[in-house]
Amino acid sequence: MTDRAWVRLPSGRRLDLLSPTPFDWTDADLATGLARTFRWGGHSAWPEPLSVAQHSLTVLALRRSRTRHRLTPAQELRELLHDADEGLINFDCISPLKPFLGPAFAELQARLSAVIAARYRLPAWTVEEKRAHKAVDVAVAAAEAVHVVGWTAQEVRETLGIRATPMEKDPLQVRYGEPPWKPWLPDAAAARFLEELTALAARAGL
Image (cartoon, rainbow, N blue to C red; front, top):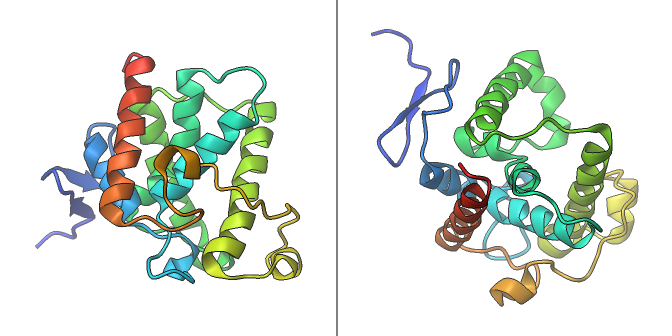
């Protein structure tokens, strides 16, 4: 047998992790993968872990609320898909582990991110846009650490090194009617992510 570096996705398509192309997955494959990939190493103070799909929707919602000028569909897609590579490999690496995985894993992530950007025609980040995105991503992470995982605000600052004050309001609570910060079941997370992705792709003319 030859060495296998591809995985079979729910649609039946094959994704070659070492040589991916923009045509290797469906939108539903990506939504499912992100809904089944968990943040914080899968640890949660709730019965369910928090999916990357839910996190991505939270980042998009907060970025929208903090933007004075409305984002374009392409910019919103870029926010929604900022962690999309994790859904294709079903792995969200916690920060302390990344140095041990080394440059080969970083290269794998870069390849996947590149084909995602090509598939969805994502614009390159400007310095200001990247700064605004990072501020939102960190703010969401601080809130998740407290409301999902169970860290204290002091631990978020001193142990995790996150300076953002954990917000109380869940940016998704009004839209979806779930208890604030409650992790969704994978099927719900996948459906909601796919709904947003489909709508944004249509608005972007994809």
